[in-house]
Image (tube, rainbow, N blue to C red; front, side, top):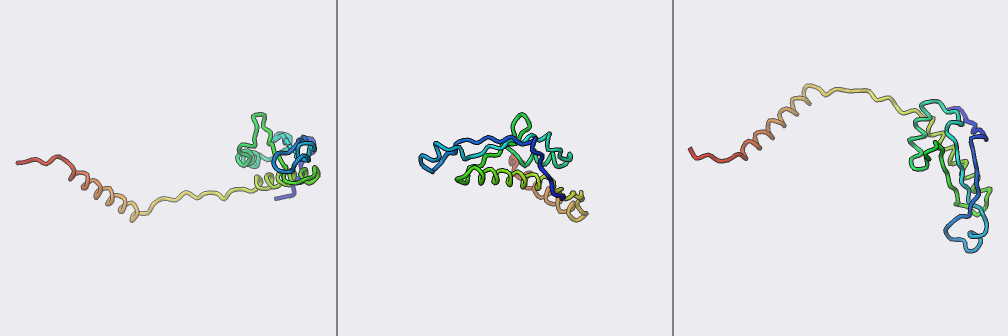
Length: 134
């Protein structure tokens, strides 16, 4: 996969206060980053576009934007880099093509085993009928 450059106009960053442990600092300082990425502006090939939508899962919004939230670190810059790294990893995985599946058919022996198993099961069920006294 060639190195993919993420266009800056496709990105929108917002710094928000992070949750979790950290005391007053977490409540006062906006160190967590929320990165929104417009999928249309990325200019991905069709196969990568389909795969990135699948990989994004619940991070994909109705407006076809991927929302990545990073609050692992204590500084804005570290969280910003973390969010961009996660986006780059997602795009790299989207460019990987899946191996083509080769359709196969069952052999004669497998078909015969299947029919024999069905016949055996049929005879078991046949024996469950009402008993007639003739």
